[in-house]
Every structure is written in structure tokens, then in C-alpha cells.
Length: 580
Image (cartoon, rainbow, N blue to C red; front, side):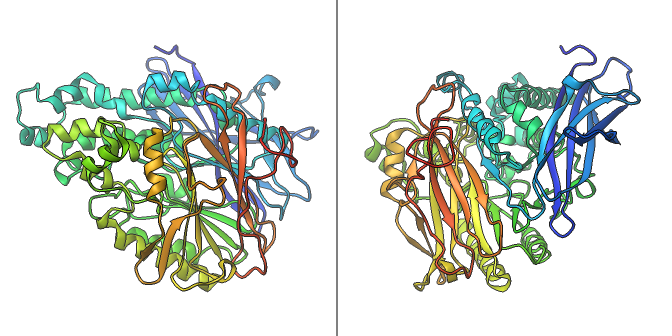
């Protein structure tokens, strides 16, 4: 039990960057344990340029929510106007009317006006199993690599592409075990219709609140959360395994909805520094009611859009018609100077096809466990739920991917919309994804041979997963590689995997994260560097780097891809493996 006054944070978030005015806005989240009957604390955010003599700018805290005895306080920073040179801003949170202690100050980098941003992308920032967490030394190793890169040359943002934590153990709560197993004496139809007792709701809320507080306090990652502005979008494990791909009878049951309510409340507070009621005014979120999609500029010529692919997901669609329309409208409103658009799709839109027979998997891989679940990085929790309610696991696992037959037409519609936007605005579209616990590079292109530089349908897809969790078994990765063939998507697109980037392999089963640089001027490429862990159990997180350069649309002679980037240990360029 945390003592009153216990504080977690600060956690830094990117709210917006406006290329026309060079204004950067951030938010800071602080979570404070209250005593019985205590009101939320009166806090003030102080910030100023490092080394500046002038007084700090200040902003009062906004009380977002009190939950489980914890007060969630948002403090807005900015606008910070980008100047002629990059600079560092120090910030601290103090009680209203008091000056913050020097030791409490944090620093954040503010890019120069017109300069390209350096930013990171990661996914799958946790573990399914304790034994894997111990084997891989937790999530800290690759976050050490992130922070070394930040120390070498500041990162201006970090993007979390889903599964920022793993909340599947919510189903181990005694009341939920009783519900799934039928120990309460109800048959499965009665259980799906039964109301949820208030004490069960309280237990669910306490689980999500505790899971987030513990995870957000993780060594090294908590340092990154305080030093670099983050933006995040959820995937299934931020809720629980497979959310959105269950039958309606399960998905809409009072118990599933009670679990989802706890997950979404925590998600809004910790990952977005807001509540669902405030999300539009606080963060300019867009989309149908009950969704939280984002679109943010990352420097003068690059924007990222992060559609909410979980809130409305069902067996029929990933995004609703209204969500697709809202996405198109938001892209149409992007500033005219944007030349690179990055689409964050937590589950890869391009991935090797999954054989639809468990017996084929077992024959090819010589395994006896649920190999389809392993391939799609399921925890086994979903299988337990399916078995209790008479639903087959295999079909549901595959349904969670864009390659499922029920989602292929939606994928084609999305691609057509993105390619149309690219052609109209002369913007290169690239996708970043996670979810599957491998590094990889895929692509879409026109079905008719067209140079990449001139092809609005050329959409590179960078898979960066996982910064924490364990890769799939080698036999599974071998099978996926063997099935990585080019395939048509409708009549206008071809999709496939690009083995030229990762040393001749379409997928690599190593933990990783991605560094993104470039796009400083119209026509300049955007470079995605996948940084792959060298050795399992290396507490320092030494990595090897592989670079993909994505040409701007319409650029002449832009580089397309390169072999493993010739980067040297601890430095910017040179030889071989990054020993940093």
C-alpha cells in the first residue's frame, strides 16, 4: 500500500507541433497518492531554457481524475517556440507557490525551427511470461540503447506502437477465473449475460491501475518517459489478448465490457494524459465517439497518424466506416509542407500468410503447442477463454490480423485511400507496425512496374517488435520466411516482404527498436534504422543497425534501400555492429 504523498512521474507527452508557427506543446503527467479525505494537490509546472537567467514560465496543474486513491494531474508546457538552434529546456513540478528543487529538474530537447526531428518507434514493451522476462533481463536493455542514442544526439519524440504493457493477467483475478471456468454454477450463456458485481469492477480497476503504476515506474524506461516526449497508441495487450476479435456474444458481455472499461480508463490517463471526455480538447484526438486517434507533426515535413484500431475492432472490421472517413478528413487537413506521412498500424498490414491448418503447422515445425498462437504472438490467455465458451482458437487468432479474409477488402480500401492522398498531395506514405515480435520490412507497390520514387502506391512497412518481449520460436520464423511471397491486393496493389534491408532475411527474430531520421527538406528521404539486439541477456542492450531509406514521392534518384548500415560502436558512421 503506497503512503499518502507517494508520487509517480513526471511522464512527458508530445501534444502538438505546428510547422507554420514553430510552436511545440507538451504535457506532463504526475500521479500522487492521496490520504483519506485529501483533496488533489495544488501543483505548478516550471520550465525555462537550460542556463537561462530569466524566471521560469509556469502552468498550473489540471486535475484529470482520482482513481483508487491516486490523483492524476496534467500540467501543460508551452508553447515552446523553436528557435534558430536546437536547445534544451529544463522543467520541474512543485507545490503551488514553491520553487522546485534543482535536483527535481528534468531536461527535454527542442529542435531548431525547420530542422528534421530524430524520433524513435517501439512496440511490445513487456512480457507474456516471467521466465522470459528473467532470461532477457526485462525491458531495460534496449531502453538503455534508446537513451544512449538520445545522449549522443537528442531524440525529439518516441512513438509507442501498441502493447506498451501486457494486461492479460487481469484474467487471473479470482472473480474472473470463477467466471471463465463456470465455478459460479452458471452455464456459458448465463455467464455471458450475467451482470458484474461492484466488487468485481473494483478488483478489475485495481488491477489496471496497479499494472500501469508498476510498469510506468520500470527502470530506464521511466527515465525515457521523463526525458523524451512520447505519443502512444494501443494494441490488444494494453487491454487483453485479442481484444476486438472475439465473438460478439463475448465481446459485448457485461464482464468483457467491465474489463474494457478499466483498460480504457487507464489507457487515457497514462498513455494520453487525459480522460475520454477531455481527449479532443486536450490532445486534438479525432474519430467517432469512443475512439482516440491521433495525427501529429514530427518536424517540418513529417507527420504521423495513429488510427485507433482497437476501440471499434470487431470480427467484421478494424476501423468503422466513420473512422475511415474521419481519417481521410484529418489527412486532408495536414499542413501543405508535409512530404512524409507515417501511418502507425500496430498490427502489420503486410505479413507472411499463415497456413490455415494447425496440422500443417505441426507437420512443418514439428511442434505440439498451439503454433498458430505462437506465430501471431498470442499469450494462450485467449485460447483459455475460447475453450470455455465453445469457440475455436485458430480462427480467432487469425482474425486479429489484416490478412484475415474478412479484413482484406478493408485493407484494400485503406490502401486505395492512402495512395490517393499520396498522389494528390505528393506525400510519401510509410507504415510502422509492431505486434509480431520480429523485425522486418514489407511493402505495397503498384501492380504495374513503377519506380518507387514515382509510385504513390509504394508504401514501405517497417515492423519493429519487440523492444521487450521474446521473439517467436526459430521454427516459426523459418516457416514465416518460407511463406513470404509477393501477393496481389485487389487489382492495383502488390504486397510483399523486402529481404534486402535485414541482411537478406525478410524477418529477424531479435528484439529491436527503430530510429527515424531525415526528411529535413522537401524531396529528402526518411531513414528508418532498425536497431537489433546482438545478444540475449546482454544487460547493456548492444545493437546492430540496419537502415531503410524511403524516398520522397517524386524525388529523382533517391536511395531506396541499403544493406546493414555501416555504423560503428558508439558513433555515427564507420564499421559494422553498433556496440552502443
